[in-house]
Image 1 (cartoon, rainbow, N blue to C red):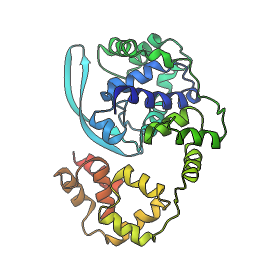
Image 2 (image 1 turned 30 degrees about the vertical axis):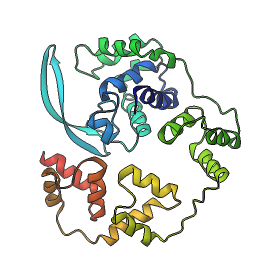
Image 3 (image 1 turned 45 degrees about the vertical axis):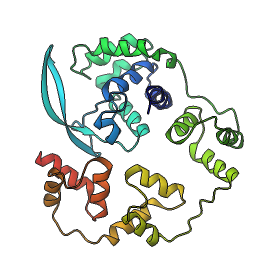
Image 4 (image 1 turned 60 degrees about the vertical axis):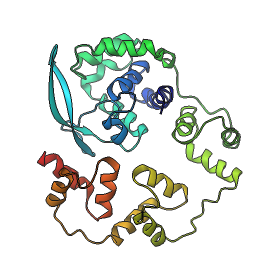
Amino acid sequence: MDKQTFISQIAAYVIKYAAQYGIKVHSPIIAQAILESGWGQSSLAAKYHNYFGLKCGSAWTGKSVNMATSEEYTPGVHTNIRDNFRVFDSMEDGVKGYFDFINYSRYANLKGVTDPQTYVENIKADGYATSSTYVTNLMRVIRDNNLTQYDGVAQQTPSKSVDEVAQDVVNGKYGNGADRKAALEAAGYNYDEVQAKVNEILGVDTTPKKSVDEIAQEVINGAWGNGQDRKNRIEQAGYDYTAVQNKVNELCGTPKKSIDEIARAVIRGEYGNGADRKNRITAEGYDYAAVQAKVNDLM
């Protein structure tokens, strides 16, 4: 993904959710995503859709991953530590997760702010980051990438019918994949409705042609990929992803090891990382959340 595509996708989701949380400026948040995730290329962002360096904290009950990070508790002195970070299922979930994170009373002074500099100074003062150059770095990212062009932009109200927008998609106006989804949603359209109409126009048949058992066996054989890609492909083909995954788990048999044993195997690197780890653990019939929690505990 190139830098402009990353900006466009993050901006679309920031614009979609900001107003719901009382946030009126967008450029600092886009800059945070760029700076914290290294343009979406960090392991935390690329594998776990955490674009803002969000740590778990005591209130988090979702998925997590333990990773190394650096903190600057004293200006100029960097300390390497390990900590638990929040895990999200998609870029959209990751952006929404940011707004959930700053919705605590600690960050109340961000609501209603319209000046990028004030927003950045406030969130630094609130303790969001320990870097002594956080404000300077964010303002540089905002200036260098002209991010203020996204300030004052509200999520658009659909001006065309689903049929008209679907035809625009067919004509190539909205791009493909995640770009298309982000662009359509930023424009205020329901992506699933538009895509269904696109499939209808193009004569794409999404009616399932195989049984859940057959698809599950294909998943086990590696035909449908892993993680979010697997889920997207199965659903786009018209199948119930949950039903298929449950059948995969059933076909792979009953777990033969304890959660502790599997967690130690994960630490040894036997189950890979990210979505691949989750899929392999789940495919063997284990509770991924329970295993990951034990991994975090052991580390």
